[in-house]
Image (cartoon, rainbow, N blue to C red; front, side, top):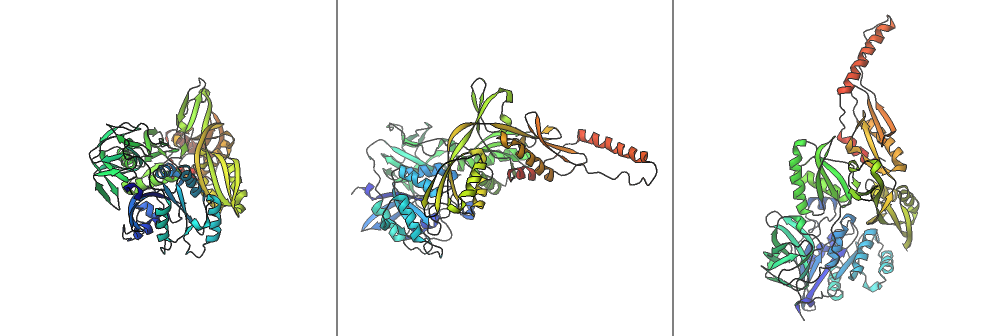
Amino acid sequence: MSKMDHIRNFCIIAHIDHGKSTIADRLLEKTGTIQITEGQMLDDMDLEKERGITIKSHAIQMQYNHGGEDYVLNLIDTPGHVDFSYEVSRSIAACEGALLIVDASQGVQAQTISNLYMAIEHDLEIIPVINKIDMPSAMPDEVEDEIVELLGCDRSEIIRASGRTGEGVEEILEAIVERVPAPTGDEEAPLQALIFDSVFNSFRGIIAYFKIESGKIRKGDKVKLFATGMEYTADEIGILKMDMVPKQELSTGDVGYIISGIKDSKEVKVGDTITHIARPCETAIEGFQEVKSMVFAGVYPIDPTDYENLRASLEKLQLNDASLTFMPESSVALGFGFRCGFLGLLHMEIVQERLDREFNMDVITTVPNVSYMVYDKQGNSKEVHNPSGLPDLTMIDHIEEPYIKASIITLTTFIGPIMKLCLDKRGELLKQEYISGNRVELHFMIPLGEIVIDFYDKLKSISKGYASFDYHIDCYRPSNLAKLDILLNGEQVDALSTLTHRDNAETFGRRMCEKLKELIPRQQFDIAIQAAVGAKIIARETIKCVRKDVTAKCYGGDVSRKRKLLEKQKKGKKRMKQIGNVEVPQKAFLAVLKLD
């Protein structure tokens, strides 16, 4: 038997919170790779521990003895959240098998299904596992029915396990060795290795994790990356245990890391192919794509002098997270800042949290929006990320906005409210399918701009937490969009501008004016808050001025004495209005996001 026959590369597919990291810990413990001290060992960021989610994928190697033979098992951990689905797809491409973990009390959920389809497309061997069977609310038999219906597998193939008690872990390891095929590839062919992740180390630069599809790599080899064309020397290569273990040579089927002194994360793209300079491979590994940001928001320092610090912090974050993009922009209301692109809302929240925690940056984030394609009368198109970047209305022929295909899995009792929510968000129902018993999967086409603000929260609340949601970008379609501006005393506040559908503009404008009226503190003069589409004002609220009772000292007497004092006050207020400016508090920007 060759060395390759003893390698098993697998990943774990599961919905958020179905116990993926816990099962991974049990596998590591059982194979003697680590001693468990506390919590999830693979989730090493504070944020990951607090939220109980996996943000960065990890890889780790285990040794397992089965039937007297030693096997090498490479676990390639994947993030379960919808925002990170591209990372998941590359991790899946590096494997030959997958553990499908389903929570015994919750059953099959949306992200499980979408990642499962991804795994089936890559022809992975699927090992179904029902986790948390020790829970009092577990329904293993019903969940087994769902899995059989989903996969069309035999009941005998499903393993029942518990990450907490460690039950069934031995069977999982045996199943991995017996059912997952060994990697295939030609050791003599030119080197072809898939990068499925990269991490930043402040001493060594970027460390890329890869799986060798064919060929060999030795320490000191001259290598190049296919998509970027950059050339490097492999200063150190090795395998991933809990720490990195250097090796002299890695061959086909191995999963390992390479350090080559790369300083810039933009050079290492997930999904890229590593090959030798002297003897390159003909083609790159299939499926590489540039990660595209989907949600954009302005990030501004609260203290304008922090601008350079913010730039440095964002650059450091980007080393760690290549999917974050940013470019400088300025706003009249907020000064200088950056326009940042994120994969989705969770990604945006995590970046904000990390700026706060790791770099102590206090930032204001503007309303998140998506990118639109604007076509002018000459037929040219340009991508606009920010409503203030729109060309003049007379120049625009039409605007196209991104649409997503969403799949929502829920109990049949919640179909009505969920349909209403999606249709209110300008969605259209594509189809609905009954999965098993009382669960249904709904497929919608929805404009991405409608779901970026509060869609997920609303979905969870109307379905009592039972609906799970997954989406992918589908296409751009022409839409009847209008730019809604907010004016304070006739001056436009660019940070509050939004692009919205023309039918919703009036109600949205009115609600924004009402909300701002509550939040902007009263001044010595009247403040007019107006919402406008183009030159047409569609809503107005007035914040009354704070006034001193100047007529208090006039007791009785002729009314003209009171009149005179009031006129004098009125003139003062008018003069004040000319020179006064309105501060929009941070609360107001945030409240506009949470308009109900």
